[in-house]
Image (cartoon, rainbow, N blue to C red; front, side):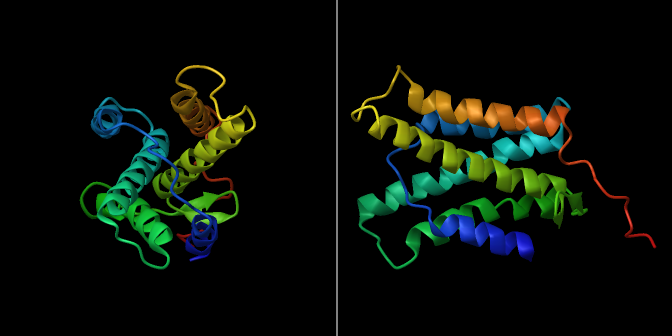
Length: 176
């Protein structure tokens, strides 16, 4: 419940920027996630990219809603929160929810990684917009809009994989 509250606070400030990714890239990321899981990539790493992918779907939905002129109070927050919440469907068919102590949260590692991936994508996109604004409205180098979020997600994946952020920091006390 605490994680839902924290996510809500983070998403309240979300405002959809311009097109964050092309459709081909979005489909490629979605397909590669299942391939990575089948190849044995750690679920926490797949979770980071899944969160980013689901947030991209939310951005695409907002872009579509802008074209159709669907506007209502809280639209961006609701659409982005629901798009990231779609990760719940994977627990119905593929994963068992098994919460563990991660930092200060008692949450499933895959879900934690998914939320982190969505937040990293959002804030790295905002960081790109800030860098662009401070450079006179121009990118510093070609494809900077793609490089900044991909590098941020790659670093987050590395943190989850090699520093094992999703391993329990406290002993499992659920069997007592």
